[in-house]
Length: 261
Image 1 (tube, rainbow, N blue to C red):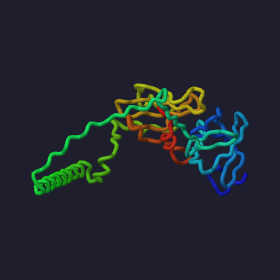
Image 2 (spheres, one colour):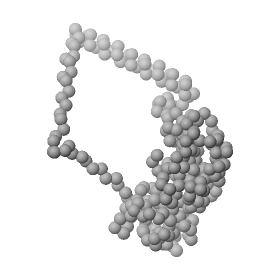
Image 3 (cartoon, rainbow, N blue to C red):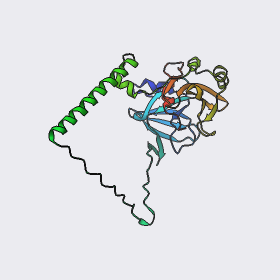
């Protein structure tokens, strides 16, 4: 099989893998690599025998570990339609009012007429005072932010999301930790949630620890065989920890493309 100088696909030779996110309109998400060209790769569905050409431009990172299954990341969600794959676009339907009735027009009340100052000199004086107050307030605000952020950029500190947690016990977890090992290390979660249907090829589970401001994510081929893949901040859902893979890299891309929950 010709490689076209792309070492990523050497990892797929003779191995079964799953696309993430899964290609829409194809129920079985297990594939083998059959052929590749400079622009596309040919994948055969292990369950249905269906063959599809996937453009290389849509293929992202390939996981180095195959437990529970090798993952081929897609840079965008694809759909199978008309014998080929294409980017999936969510259609938005515009709903018109029933009976062809037009929407009522809301008329805003007229604003009151501005009061006139006594003279042009008064207007200039008020404008100068207002600008001076705003400038002084900005200087004080920047000074306070600079001191409290310990020398960091005060503008960046203003928009930085607070991802602090009560502890960092999740840093002791690895990608080999099963559900029971995670619970033994972290304690029983306040709430557990499956992120997809039971018949899906890949299972994702969230263990919620709201008092600690984070949730732990597990992944597996079946619900009986789940492994730790990372921790997200609650409620911002920013990645706090991504499990390291045995051949390099981590699960960060998986955590940023989880099913909506």
